[in-house]
Length: 193
Image (cartoon, rainbow, N blue to C red; front, top):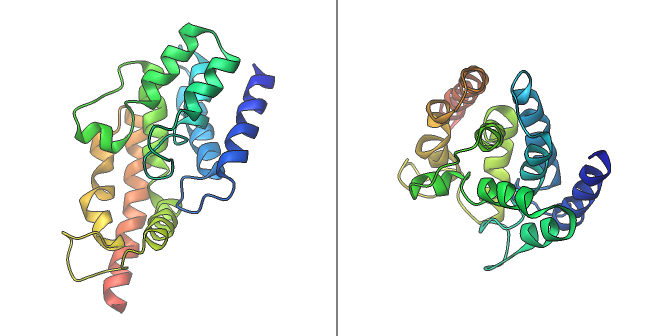
């Protein structure tokens, strides 16, 4: 499996090393690392978790062209059909926008990867990713509203509530700690604004 993961990492790196919205190679690695941590003590398919963690953003509408099939292409070249189906089920149902559409991940592996991805949207890294994405999309820092597309509004529209969407108690604890940090950042931001 180690060789497969190395090949997958290189595939993701090649595609996302210059991505500057916060959905880059290093995000994929952090999600993989966190998912591995969240897997400890659980009876899971480690290969499915690794592949879903690393590949999960390659076809995301925020960074890929419509009808992108990069994940499916990689899996078709490197894994059996059963593994491909399991990974695709996770990748196609785990995002926050999928959640808003009523989709959900059912597998234990999917719930782990989903929590790991959501955790990377929080804390210091999460703050950095908000501003990276907002800059890339030409969004304002703050427009005196929480109902617009500004970077600060995103904290209130999504990020500060992610702790309640975690699948596991240990994920929720990490999320609460990271959200507390974000709230402190926001207090300081409004003090200076």
